[in-house]
Length: 198
Image (tube, rainbow, N blue to C red; front, side, top):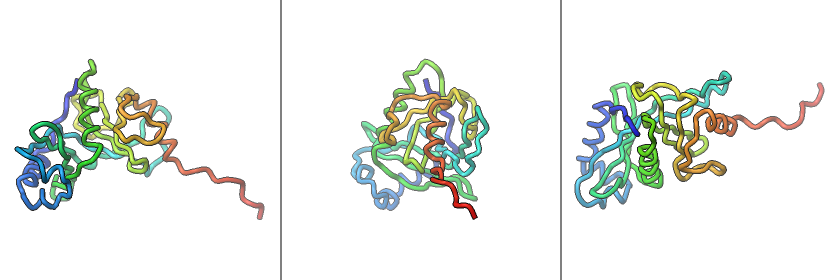
């Protein structure tokens, strides 16, 4: 059961303006968007967070920090989502960033359907781990949160396909179980050997 938080109105307006601009759509380099027949509408806005790996010192029992970097809208055609639109926060507020397509569009739709079938209500978000080329649907347990709060150990993460080797796509994991695995993969490799005595 999903309880999405509303996207900032300027973010939605910027996507609607881009969809209404023939130049923006033509230059989007997303063939599915350019060739879509019928009306296109932005739907299912999700706040996009990035796993913050700049500070690897995470106290025991705490989740690594995340930071909100944008909002993503699925662009729906008459039958299905054909692309997505990202917005970003600038000094002047939320603004349109770019359109894109690819496997994460369908994978996001699939994960949202999975989450909708759960009995527990969740606030849907996206969590990106750029260093692992990984994107997950993050199901936050506090449905009244403002969209900027950190992961809770009991939250769920559903890795989207394609997922990194060794991590099953579309299999829900508790944050407490998956984030330590990701943090370990992101840790710098140990130095081999010991320095020679001076």
